Image (cartoon, rainbow, N blue to C red; front, side, top):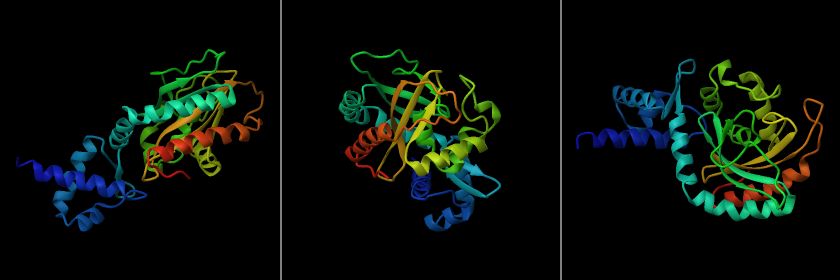
Length: 257
């Protein structure tokens, strides 16, 4: 039972970090939670080791870690998110006539939870339970675009994290950040041949009540483009995907952009 106060303090640290738009210093955490500095650093060290907290030495600040994000995503993907998403995906497929997916981040990969296909489906590598590099998929980047920069850096710490399936897609953290910035401003993400040559996808994130991206809805279709970046106009398709994603956000009590 002596561990209970420490557990409560650790949870208080996580709740505080969850309310902030970016990383904060240990001194701020200690002050706002009325904790001794030594206790604060001990809690942060334990949480960092468990990956619930990320330490940014150059900034002398702390933010939520990958494990915290995975825990939040796991809660929603266990049942409520999928049950609420399924009818919306079916409506989306009927409207656009292409395959639709619901996916969540799992580390630096995109995990597909649901796949709905039209009456005459096309064979895709993406299927329920399949994981693909998040930086290559439209769904993965739709989520990454709304994560703090520190989270993205933690997911892609070195060049080795940028695996490739074709000759397309970002190869460095700088290139990924530039792409994410563009897609965040636009409100949706797209990829053309990054995952499979001859196919393209358009995606829009799902947001929770704190406006945190927890999943994404995407549509995938056959498309071949010889230019990089692709010059195709995806705005009409993106509008359909946006409607489905924002409706799912509303149904889980989230706040769309």
